[in-house]
Amino acid sequence: MSLAGLVPGAAVHLASRIATVALGLAVVVAVARQGPEVQGAFTLFVAVESALLALCSGFGLALARGVSHRGDDPAPLLRAWLRVALAIGVVTAVALFAASRIATQPPYGQLGWLALAAPVLLVVPTASGLWLGRGQMVRLSTPQVALPLAVLAALGLAAASRGDGHGALTLVEVLAAWVASRVLVGLGSLAASLREAPPSPGMAPRPALALLRDEWRFVAAVGAANVVAVLNYRVPLFVVEHVRGLDATGVYAVAVQLAELLWLLSAALSTAAYRRIGAPDRDQAARVALQATGWGVAATLVAAPLLWVAAWAWLPLLVGAAYADALRPLALLLPGVVLYATASAMSAFFTNHLGQPQWAARIAALSLALNTLGCLWAVPRWGLEGAAASTSLSYALAIAVAWVQFARAAGVAWHAPWAMRADRQSPP
Image (cartoon, rainbow, N blue to C red; front, top):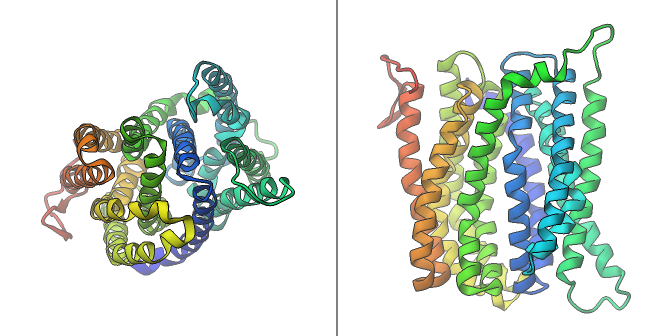
């Protein structure tokens, strides 16, 4: 598999990701301009949402794996996983509403807003498994672009409804705009996925329980891995909020969001290659994963200094002088973010090819443990710079362990990744 084989799909996905990131940056600017306190509370609110999405992210991946790896009929699989997603969404809505009645501090007291979107919140990542498994990058990318676009439209409507057009939006207005976008795109994705995978005429569908029974272990492992990964990315925010308050959290959140823009490059390649990485032949899967990893890291390495220069030139102008303090943490985050870009394709190899999503959970758990301990020690001493340095170091150490494990499982010489070993070993 040459790089050229990945380019068309990667180009489509990368273009959509660039559009998503541009719109996402516009959302960041719009929210950040309401003040660091609103930005900090909004970021923690979104972190709670991200943990929920991560916990149930295995639904879509199980669907994608069934379509790409085993060649299953997508129609009954899609409907089965959508029923599960909707049912869990309803239960989650009740739990979030109850939590909002107990909590008093923002943003936790506003979790009732997330409860309004919870019934359809899991539809987008679940339905996206259909398009990921088929390698349909345009359809996969559509809801990703639509989400921030809908947020911007809702924020614009909220500002226009004020009449005078002056004054900052409140946290409640920002959250209402965010939730409205989730509901709109979730319903659209539900309708589109059902239309594109109609039941096969004349064929009796297998019972849903029979379709799902063998996948629960895989789904649970994916969910655990992704929840740990989300906590790994977001635990510094909660430590900063506890030690330094919401204003500091808002500033640090901007640095984190900018640094993680680099992952769109590696994610574009690994997503485009996801179907090929799931190929039954291990040599082919390993080679594609290596190519996606190498080119992804090269792209992020080139982009990292450009990103920092752009932030230095434009960040204070776009969101205000209060966010100038995000530049030093951003510089400290970038080396670790570049190294962690390798995780995307390696995780796809273990998850889609080997069916071992617990590998990603182990790597993320290692990084989470290192990051949490580091932040608890460093943030009280060095503030935002301490959080950024701890995060970067934990990423570097975790990815070193990850590479050794990947090399062993894929039959790659760890010191010479371009050379496949003749004495291939089975993964542990």
